[in-house]
Length: 505
Image (cartoon, rainbow, N blue to C red; front, side, top):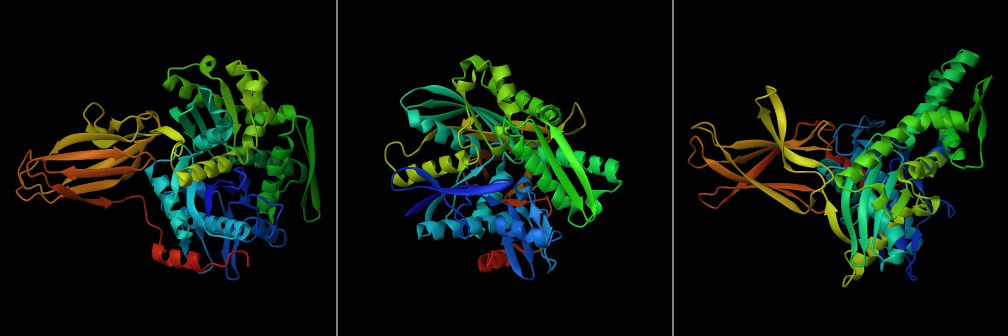
């Protein structure tokens, strides 16, 4: 039996399982035995579906092939991220399902059996919409119903389980391809307790690549007078060069990178040294440090209380990351661990999947999860004369958590009460609507008729809401009205296409 752990990443995705020796092991590409990560890039066209390295190879010959990347950053939005040759619109979860199906095929080919269970990781900052979309993607890929685990928790599991007899406070700095999470955990012989979390869905390797692409474009405009983004394959050429520069400068031994961009008969030499590169990434690092210190403050702790800093995510390998963290935390390099940053999340997910499958003592490695977002309802704010948010369950509350309010009708003929659920990452961030929930019908309506509404924030980060008539004790039906847009192609059609898809064949 295979109990799979999957890190569904913004840029790359990986699948891992625990082998017969108890060691987490990555599943290689079924066609490339030395490749252990799948680019989260997809093409859907008249000749079939390409995912990962097969797509990257095809782009060498067909650089203008329509592709979609970074679908993870749009999970739960219900807006299309790709339109194929048949004018079918694909949302982020459908694109992610194709990536997951490819990973499932690789895993089945490697272990010669289908997965019996699945732990799937998500950024700690994902709200209810993104988490439900991630689950839906797994089901569309015909994987087992997944158990969701936050990425920093999975990384801490991988790093921390080799010394479970000692109590430690662990700070996880997770800088991935498109998201950043700062998470503080307490590790004990009983398992892991999440204390606080903070983060951003707009920081990471993609941010660095975008900045480098801007610089490369400026160099080409100054040197050759051409806009490379208007050239055939120019965008792909720039992106790959930017990624290569970033990866090369991830080694402390490399002080400077020289590359040549080729556009037809024109060439442009590029040179970027470490001082220039460090200046480019400084604003992003500043923001990650501010988020990290907010995470500590939310737990009423300081860097001195942290026993170990864990780096995970590909972009955490940048030398400037370790340097900045060492400066602000006062920790020596020996207390800042960066072990397999690309694979730590997938390996941690596999360890959790293995432990859950075994059951018994130690099966639940995560003893306490917390809310990554404030959860509340939309209300009218008399002070500002506009809609505001009443927080019912604050961020960093241990989960599961419940809150019950009694709401009242305002008219004699009112047969339903409608509430809008809101999630937000902080007081300064914009809330995200989870939809409008209508409760009713009320059999004998009148003004000030009470309804008892209970909102539940579940352990995996999902949100549920129910209402009860306190006078009759009956539970009221709830109808969800989403207002976030709907993808044109029906879910049933996309599910059928995904199920029948022959990926990279």
